[in-house]
Length: 113
Image (tube, rainbow, N blue to C red):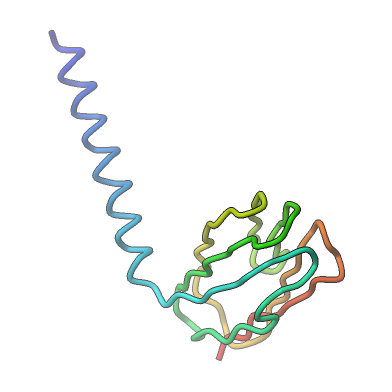
C-alpha cells in the first residue's frame, strides 16, 4: 500500500507547484501582442527593465504564426485562433528584437526601460 501514498504525494506536489507557477505568472506585468498573417500589433512593446514580464500572444490570422526572439531565447508556435503566453526574464535596458518565423517580414522590438 506504500505505492499509492507515494504516488498521491507526488501528484499533490506537482499540482501545487504548477498552481504556484501559474499564480505567479498572473501577477507579472502583462503585455498583449496580436499576430496575424505577417502583421504584428503592436510592433513595439515597452516593458520595465530589470523585471520579469509576460506577453500574451494571440493569433488572429488564417495560418500558423511563431513568436520568436533569438536575443530573449523564446519561441512559441500558435495555430490559427490560438492564444498563449511567454514569460520573459528580467532584462537590462535596451532593445530586443522579435519576429514571426513563419512570416519573416513581421518584425518587432521589445524596449526595456
